[in-house]
Length: 248
Image 1 (cartoon, one colour):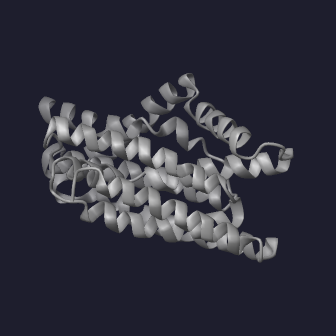
Image 2 (tube, rainbow, N blue to C red):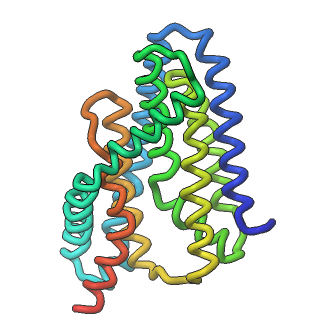
């Protein structure tokens, strides 16, 4: 397959899954849709736990020491949290959702608008935050095939069905975020080659896992963490790891 095929496949599965979810969601009571969202939140929490455990990967510990991995992730999240909040990344992401909602759902009331934006933001974060997004896109760009993104596309398709039963067409709009982010990372992979060590991948994986915990808390309506403000940590974690390895 050609580079970028995995991303296009992912976009299609999100759109198909969201359409099926919307059609099914209208036939389900609100209580049932809430249960579906809660179930998705719990599964997201489980996936996040496995990803965050990468903080104990042998390659990362061997490269930076036994106590440094947690400090690397802490530094990445705190520094990028400050930067993201100053840049108002979460607000800008929600603003993009409002723009799309006005174009795609003209005439909706405020409740429908909020539902659209929440669906767009939550689905975009779930579909675009995580090591599989980065590693799969880079592998695709390197010409190694799109197997990882094909797996992610299948998972996202089922997740889109679950999301759309509760949030509607906002989930379909998240396909745009998938196209932009994964397509951009595919180009990075094609241009940069293999630039991440195994230790850096582990740091990125653990950081992405913690961000997914924040997404899960949002889905479970426990706390609306500004996960969007923390997204730059996915870039910072490998960079901080490289600095620690160099200093050490």
